[in-house]
Image 1 (cartoon, rainbow, N blue to C red):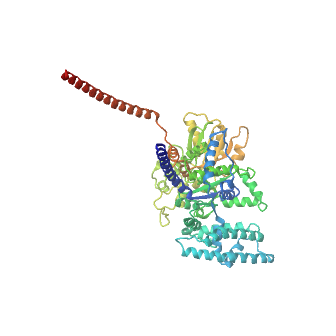
Image 2 (tube, rainbow, N blue to C red; image 1 turned 120 degrees about the vertical axis):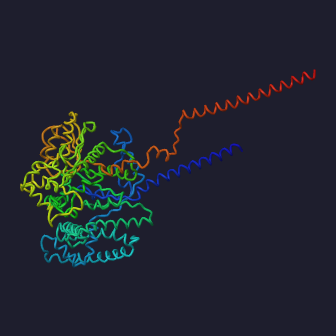
Image 3 (cartoon, one colour; image 1 turned 60 degrees about the vertical axis):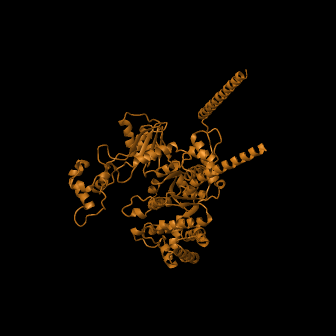
Length: 638
């Protein structure tokens, strides 16, 4: 009977402990489930780098179908291998398939808003030559295809206008995520048969028109419409979110691909769960991938690169033009996609790491490269350059940081962003300007013409300082493009000079981290200092690699940076809850304090001893009293 009672008591305790653990685990799961419920990844990168490849990996139904490289189980060569085992094991339990939104499909929705005749006129205007009679059959096929999907698009658009509060229906979902991609692919095949390359030209023209005017056919710039393209993408995201209310599934979305920086800013400002991922590789590797496609020539690649990275963007062109260099520059996470014989091992390893960290921040710590590049990234914000902010870090061979630099004027001079053109022309704040600027009449006259500070032509700037770039004004006067007129030291140069300035710390066989890439002048300095490796984000168009670095002996190695920086660095590596607390909660850990337990036991023993001593004294008193009574009784009897 006694044993049965003990067994029931033990069982009740086990149930209570289990309930307590389950509640604790539910609390943890709630925190991290929220992270996985909604994720938006925007992909960017030069054509041929691997954005489409990455999006295909993210579409995999299961972790086993992703098939990333398996981690080591023992004999780890370094801590990065141990970290990979952690993220691999985590993601194997939490993989989530991503919905794929192609930007080309969004362009298709704008095209399908046009009547066929308008579409026909638009696409033919992008062709190199007029079409002959042999294209009549293809024209007929094109019209049939377009008309069919034009009707479906009109129906979907009408539904969305009437159901703004809930965009989801099975038919609408089917159209946008299955039928619309099929239309884009069909249109691509038909246009390619009509004239190779015509699909790409059409979609680039239409994409530019949309960003300019908000419509497929008009190239007239309307500043109020520059976000129309992003807003339509956002509607597809909303459709998925409305769908998830009934299905209870996670909404993980990959946008392939973002090629205008203001599209990235649109989503970044709206969603804390948005991350811009750039995919990079060596230029030679990228070109070889493109050339392996039978329809692409070297001339085609030059045309693609010139469109994606225009030499010079002026004025409002920046809001609608493609600008891959800027997109890569502002990316949250940089992924490196080397040529590894189609196995994609390196890309998959990086994907496992960063999806795990998005879902569970702080699961592992940053790499050495991430730590150093984040400092360079933060340093660049000190730059007063009006054109581009760049940061750099120099370390020794053990990755111990020896110097930090950013592009800026020499110490003691006033940065360009703090100087006002009107002050120079009014002879105010004289210490901010050079003798040349103050006294050269030709320069002052040119500056006054450019900025127009007086009279009816004065240009308002809403209270912001009217700064100017000395190099641009001087070059415009001289009629040439001369970098020697820049006022600023380059970030790498500044970091090197800090080493010299503060005692010449050894950096031989060390590392140079730069948020851009070293120009020809800085590359020579890195070579002279015997830097072992230059880690960079995006290369300048120049000959620093082929002409300066790739020459001689003891050649510095060049390494494309891969990792999280900027806001993503903070978001991914700062734990939501200290991991020690997570272990304690999740495993119901109770690590005993042996010393405290012994002290408590000793205290209880002392209390018990005192009680026993008091009891013993009481018994002795009782015994003495009894003996005394017995003695009195004995005497009375006698």
